[in-house]
Length: 536
Image (cartoon, rainbow, N blue to C red; front, top):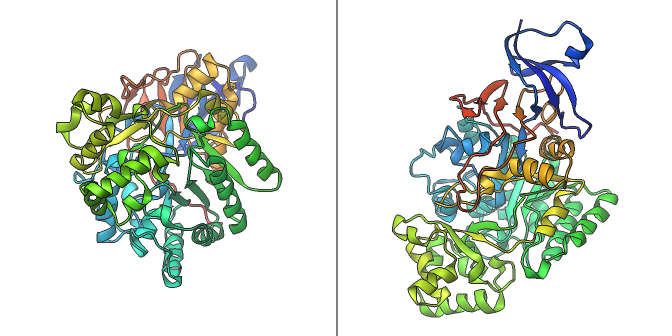
């Protein structure tokens, strides 16, 4: 007798084809049989040790979050309901060119400081790894959901070149190529970049092309946060397409958005650019989150010259009056490269989290509002916040456009990614609500996608990009990473006012055939492991 049978589920199998009624049998962490229309056919129904009545529920593959920032959260928080409760069974981490492997002692400390706003400093954890393989081994001790890893190009550059704005020497480039190759050999699925974050942004396209050749040789893909999502966004997208085509490397565009006033209504131009490349033979996919605001660190808005040398050098410039005035001019007048070439509007920058609790009264306010309450100029408030919070402040940027969000999510290569930063008192609700928001708001309420099409966006498409041969579909022999949701009630509970509210309408989530969410509640199961690159 098998382990579990899920009876009378409406199976949206991830292919995009119409749903069908079936009994699905699971044993040993795999789907062992699918009996379609068993009750109607009057045939002998499969039996198991446990039977689950799924009448009225949709059974789909587990959702794959193609852009997550849970690099430390998976280790810090075994519960991890932020993702498990959404039906996420696999996250792709190591994003935006900055994460915690490969490192040495120096680089690890620098990276911890640089992305405290994303993941916390990590002083509550023993960061006892240095290589990509050692980090993946640490995940394999047991986590809430599965995780795949991208070699972070910025971290590699910090390890080899440092935080200086200069070209790598031939010897340094050779070392970076070896470092990327080692990460892929140890199980990474590709490489990421953060080309508006230091030090990755200091790499010229020729350097990135050489690293992408390495990625391609291992069957991986390149996932860039490219050089602009504001002024020059289309040119930045085109540059990534050209770069990866020259390198022969598959391209996955991270959080593909068209933001700021200069790009309102311009998503069709981006999609035409991508369609032309696809029709010419390019291998391109993208992910997006179903919200208009973005989220990053306050320090990320600074011009690249001000960030050269690492966190301590940034703080020194912020406390120097002449350097601080030059930074202000770049931010408010010129439009810094850290703010995507657009002059900052402090009324759109909302403080979402601080490292120092003494600054907690600023959370939930825009920089302009906080400055008004203090009777000072917005830059003075922002500058003081950066210094007093040691660059650890996270912010929401209210600069997106709903028409662009909807157009991009309909694209033929679209996948879902939360870009969820889990730190801060008021994080972006996408960290807790992305996947149920797709199913509730954009499928049931708005009709932007059909249910079956949306499930494919969130399951089989990302599995194909990750080259996972036994995930992303409800098929016999596939891994039993599965979600049961109620299509009539599934919804994101997270709001900008209450961003940590869990979703509704997702009563069951299985990882490796074991319930991590059962009857709407998190179990103590830690069935997640690292998902390593399938050899080319």
